Structures are given as C-alpha cells and as structure tokens.
Length: 67
Image (cartoon, rainbow, N blue to C red; front, top):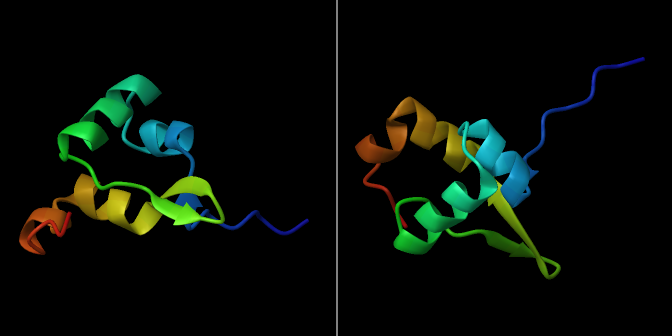
C-alpha cells in the first residue's frame, strides 16, 4: 500500500497540532492576526499547510508575513 500523501490544507484541529497547540489557542492567535486566516474551500475553513510550515521555519518573517 502506498504511503498517504501529506495534506495541502488542514482543518483547525490539524493546523493546531502542526504548531503543537490546542485548537482554542490556535484560533485565538488567528483572531489576533498572529496567524493567517483560513481559506474558504466550498464553505469549509482550511489553513494552507505551506503557510504553517513557513511560520514554523521563520520564513514567514523573511517574506514579510502577508496576512
């Protein structure tokens, strides 16, 4: 069986786990503008995993944090 591909977009729970946070902590930082807002995909809120990886690596600061 082939390995499952990594997600491109994440739910709030998965996004919080990627940053080692509780969902409530993650959403509070989104509300404050410290983390990017979700994308709307067919009425579902999802966060781009690439953005979360850029935050974790520090690259978002170098890119000027667009949100």
